[in-house]
Amino acid sequence: MDEWQVRARIDQALNNSTKVYAMENGRLVRLHDVIKVRELNAFLGLIIAYSAGSFMTIDRFYLDSFHPVRQKRIINRLNSHSGQINTALLLELLRLRDKTKLSKYDIIRKVQHKYFINQPIGTRDITESLNRMLRKTMVDYFWFEGKYFRRSNFDLRLIELPNNANYDFIKINIDNIIQF
Image (cartoon, rainbow, N blue to C red; front, side):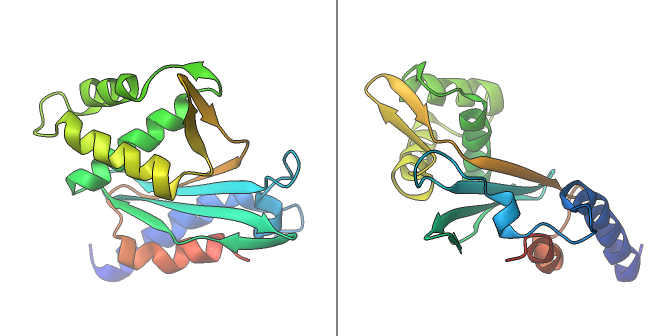
């Protein structure tokens, strides 16, 4: 398969995934349509683009005085240990409900046994990734209050991409789906 056929397949997959996000008049979803008004001034949104076996990108948004602000995109490449750990942690955090009683250790143990049972990834690596995620990158979305896991109200959109897609080829197409 040459490069043009690969690009045609990627474009076809993106066109199929944009149908989920197309409005009735045919235009693509704008950021104002993705982010929904939540309680008080807490306007948050996550858009996750995922290509199995290749990468997961996370675009974080918030509204500041009714103007959308996009934070720096997080790119987890699934051919590296840190990308695999961050992706597994995010999937587990998204599955949890607000006010669930559990500890960080329970999440770490669950991720290690579910995703990394026969791999050389220890609890230290998972702990460092979870602490970085809760302290820096996802602090507005997930946190702990005492023994309870807390989760913000945020809007979540998923974009499925072809398996093993190269991020460098598909980056512009992801940006076209997520318009301002």
